[in-house]
Image (cartoon, rainbow, N blue to C red):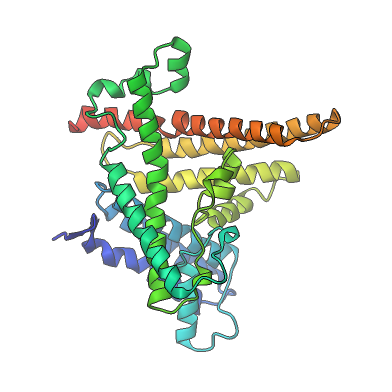
Length: 372
């Protein structure tokens, strides 16, 4: 019998814990020299993660976040056991110490945090706990309000999901963009991107409270998960300076392995970017997969598109900087401010155009086949 707690089927707790246990034990006790055994254990961990993902309920966003987390566990296990081939340090002599090291490696919400946003050295433990408790509460309340449709213009009708509303560019070119359609688009953009950020921020704050408040971890080891939104004035900076980096290492290491054969460094770096986004797209597609007619690979294509856009964007920036230098022009504060505003508009437009487009197709399919 399924028991739902916070939108998660607790009957899936054991299937979700099994891959963690296998990964931790494998890291702790299988030496790097046992490559074949590590490969077998990695494949077993990935299989258990996929089994837990496909067993879960697919009706809640919390369940979707759990699936993404399990996908990340599979990727990081592959990194640690096969690519980095790491093992416990010499100081971990006892079985307990080795297991503790493996636990910290596999379950580490601190991975990918923005070190440039370290809390003040003078912050006390009490101040830290109060601050993170407030952040967790704020994030959860804000997400609850967003998910209730507070930003939407009242009732949403079937006509609001018409295919003609899929593209902002098409509507602008044809002059058919209505204020209501723009309102819905902006509301969806905020929910799709910042809703996910709020959930992750809440979970990270709870982990920080648990680690620091109960287990005595130093609060300096728990900086904020996200960077400053004001720094996200290009797509590349959105990912490098604002968005979390929880699985970035797993993406780039696998991508680097797949692109190692490319002889030209610049091309190889571009391949790493493209493959990293593609791997992320596969992960999100698997996590969001639903059986039936509404199954979709839209997340994969969305992430691949982001990878291409980031690469092209950086090429344009480099070309402009070279042209600027060749003309002997000096950078001014006014010019920098101008391009930053242009960048904010560009990033916002990209997410409104590309980031929410799959939502329209998914809504139409849901209405057609499930009567939602």
